[in-house]
Length: 128
Image 1 (cartoon, one colour):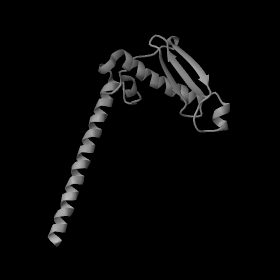
Image 2 (cartoon, helix red, strand yellow):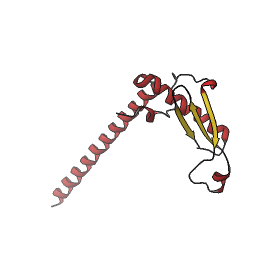
Image 3 (cartoon, helix red, strand yellow):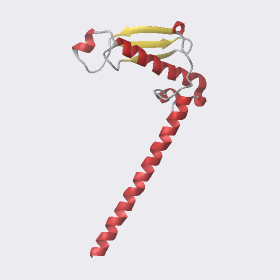
């Protein structure tokens, strides 16, 4: 089972709940991680909080404040949608579907590997 809020960040979701700017609190802080002086001197990390649900998103993916604001809103919208809709959310359904595809791909790869091993063994037996 996938923790609900970790399923967020899928771009294809169309039926997301709308966020109003009145429900949001926005802060700009210094980012963390690699980047050295460029990271340590600029406040381009966006911290966005949805007040009614208490969900907080921190975004420092780019050096641009505007891009980070946009990305943070997208992530927050998906997390809020998951928070209110739960397993009925499109984001959750997409995550489940992609997990299923991933498992199927792993299963097929494992089967192919087994077939290759058997084939090699048969070739060696034929040589002897």
